[in-house]
Image (tube, rainbow, N blue to C red; front, side, top):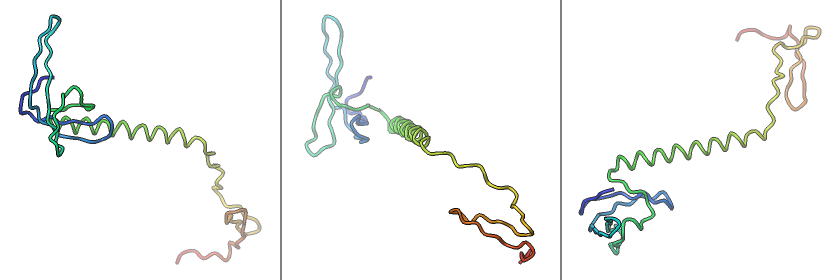
Length: 133
């Protein structure tokens, strides 16, 4: 990737989710028998205004905040999918709920039997039920 001296670049740390701006302050061109090598020195926004070789920074490098944002959203989406996939696999340890829900109440001599939960059942007389308000 080619940069201009004075250009601001954005560093997305690979160690954590930190983002830092940096300024390209020097371009170094070296020519060897095998190839030409271009390196850049950047200035970091810390209290010492540290200067480091760009290639030594453990970060992804972006030239616009829009590109950086897209990458961060992509990373977040991928992480969310991983969380959800893990959750789906963990939920398999639970027993599925029984689908034995009575659709019709049982009638015994004009009395309804009602399941009150916890193994407790109650009976209510159908003739004593009031319809409406």
